[in-house]
Each structure stands twice: as structure tokens, then as C-alpha cells.
Amino acid sequence: MAVAFYDVTSDAGLKKLDDYLLTRSYITGYQASKDDVTVYAALSKAPSSKYVNASRWFNHIDALLRISGVSAEGSGVTVEGCAPIPEGAIATPPTADSKAAAADDDDDVDLFGEETEEEKKAAEERAAAVKASAKKKESGKSSVLLDVKPWDDETDMKKLEEAVRGVQMEGLLWGASKLVPVGYGIKKMQIMLTIVDDLVSVDTLIEECLTVEPINEYVQSCDIVAFNKI
Image (cartoon, rainbow, N blue to C red; front, side, top):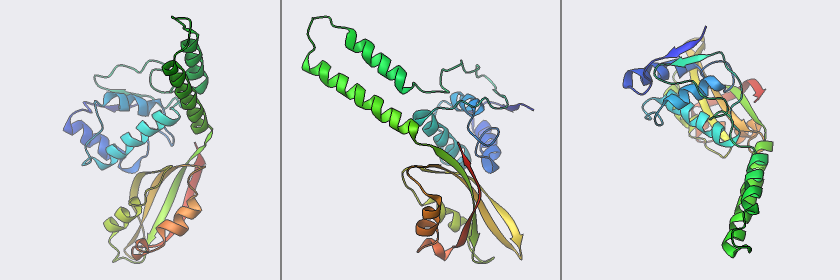
């Protein structure tokens, strides 16, 4: 069944989107798709931080579009007042080859018969940008579902989540989370995260960041529930 959203630029529409993303990392499925791009394009700006889930989702999709693009088809989503996204308009950023071709075309234009120092510098900057973009695309990414377990039923789960999300590093993006009962009044937190494989090791993240002081005041242990390449 196709997912539909209405007036996502209004407070009411954003609230419904925020509630929808409470237990989801993406609009449909388990990876970013054109459904996410459709809703992303319907928003005139990033949602306010008071819409925690929608804001987190928006920033994640924005980062994906800047780094590697979104190509999965999705299940189909409609947004009131938003025209369908033209093929290739947003979903996939320019590839290194197309950027290189554009750079070559620019270099072939010689209006005065001699390349100036400024033109040479601009060409070098374009080449460096192409190289950097190609390097980024080579780095794979993974989607991880993590179980974060508290010490007991008296652990403040709100502070636990704040402590976990407070861990920030290059190549790490926290996603949606939810509390899951485990018995005796104790709840664990399940949280999604996306990592750049070359920059972040989940084992290192757990051992050196999530189970050490001061976070271990709230976190007893962490387990990897699912690990999928994107």
C-alpha cells in the first residue's frame, strides 16, 4: 500500500511525519529510496528540532544525497501538493565521470588562445573535487540496528538515549530509536545508525565509546541486532 502525506510544510503535517518516523529510519523499507527523496523535496526547509524524528531523518537523507545519492525505487509515496520527482533530478548526484567530462569541456574553451593562471588554478580545483568525490563514492556504508541495555529498571532511559546520541564522529549518523520491554519492568533501547565503513567500526564504537565512562553510568551493554550493507 502506497504511503501518503498531507501538507508536510504545516505543523500538523510535520507532526504526523514525525510520529510516522518514530519507529522508522526511512519512509518505506529498510534503505533510503525515492520515497524518501519525494518527501524530502516536499519540505521547504529542514524540520524544526522539536520534530526530533523528522529532523533526524531529513538530515540523514540530505547527507546521503550529498555523498552518494539515492537510487532504490521504494514502494510509492504521495505528498499533497508535491509533483513527482523527475528521473535523476535529485535522487543521484553527478558522478565523478560526468564531473570530469564537464571539467574537460570547460578546459577546451579557449577564448583568448592562452590559459591564464586563474584558469589553471580553477582547473586544478575541479580535478581535486572530482578526485575527492570519487574517493567518497568508493567508501561503502552500512545500516546497523543496535540493542542498548540499561543496568536496571531505575535507569533514566531519556538520559541514556541522550548519552548515546551524544557520541558524534565522522561517518556516524544516528537514526530512529524505540524502547522495547525485556521483563521485570526493564526496557532496552533499539536504535538505528548508519556508518561509513572506512571511518567507523561498530565494535570500536561499542567498546570505546558506548560502554565507557561517563556513558556506562546508564549503559550496561550493547548488542548488534542487524548489520546490512547499503
